[in-house]
Length: 119
Image 1: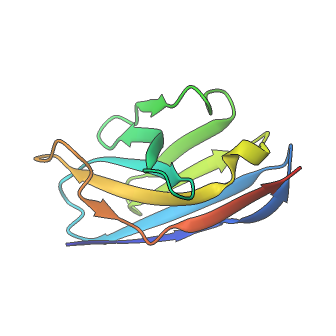
Image 2: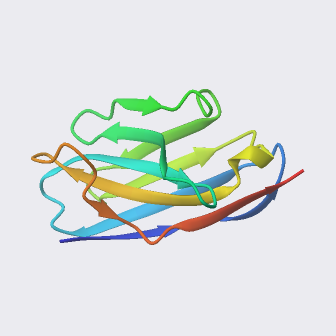
């Protein structure tokens, strides 16, 4: 079991910045990757950014490339998402997720945090 707690969501004006943070606890010794996903009302979750736990390599969705940065702190088992130049289209519920090394998909999810960008 892995418990994920997200923080840092809120309301910001377009062009502003927010930083999301996620802390993992529990069975964290075999983490393969962590990621941030977002969900619009009535739609499936979509990937925003993912980071390989071992070497820190990151992958971004095209819509956030150059604006968002994912980072991880291995000793603290945290992953952050720095979001700059926010747009109203970034308004969504953001979820943190963990994928264990033996899994092909993300197997634990946080409760989600709301990000609202006003125009």
